[in-house]
Length: 461
Image 1 (tube, rainbow, N blue to C red):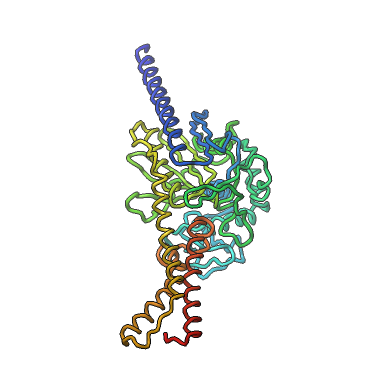
Image 2: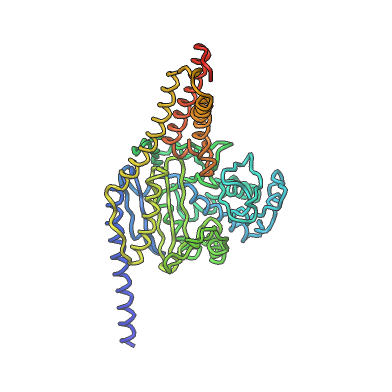
């Protein structure tokens, strides 16, 4: 009997030591990464079912009780609230949403479940006031409007505002005293950490774009405010099978399993990833993982749970840098998973952030210079009467391309090639938006100048 006891004790001690080593390595990695990637402010927490294993703050974030807008991580909270109502028999996942929201009678049946797993058919850039079913109906297409509608269903069924419902049924029982489900009420909180937008590689601090009636998303889809300390309590609830620290039942383990594993494929075969209810799921290098990211205009967040290891991790960053930092952070997430799994990762690159921004800045400068060149050339009108017909036709075609089609291309290529409307670029990539708008104005102005000079000088086009 003693032999068995010592074997078990040795296995337990070895496991604790390995976990401690992994946490220490992650701590060291995070310090290097925060400096190399010029992150203004960041908080990271790692927790197991019983305690916080790591709680780190960097830069402008001076502790785990500073509030961040958590972006689309809010969707998991909304899904949790819906599943609470399902358990009470007040919501049926297979019910058409018009049964709860009569004003949303659509041409096809849209169920509560299809909102939860993004198979409703709504376009990614739909809003509450213009949501229409598209040809993506029945398959996954991520859309914030799905979760804004779920927020309305929660209000309709419970008779409470979204804020009051989630406060009463999630925040209060979990002891999340610094979390808010009304962005405007969080605006003046002394704990709210201002975010940062990126301009050509430099971060500029400023307020978030607080949601209004016609915003792209609202609190149920992406504008809950929480702290790393509060959110860790939320994540540990999942690790404890739906129980709060005091033992209060928030949700059943069966409902948690449904949120995680009752899912649909994302269509990205490379990763074999799925979307359930407010959570993504994938098996990464033999390790089950549920996760979700989030962003508002001036901040990004990430969270993931490793069910087999009983570990939960959360990153909150008060900066949004769509093309560079956000992509680098995707690599950081995978690196952190590897480190916690005891696997080696590559050293953090000291100059990758700067080099990537220099590349994008060079592209921006090229666009601007080309537009400026088009404008300058417009002031140099030439007689073309004596030129051949083919040459005149060639100049006319070049003029159309330079003064009309080029500015139109600048204003529409993000929608045509990237399926991202210009208004989204304005919100999330303000430096690119400024370059595109200014460059389009310059080249279009060149066309006006060219036509005006030709009329004044009586030149032929």
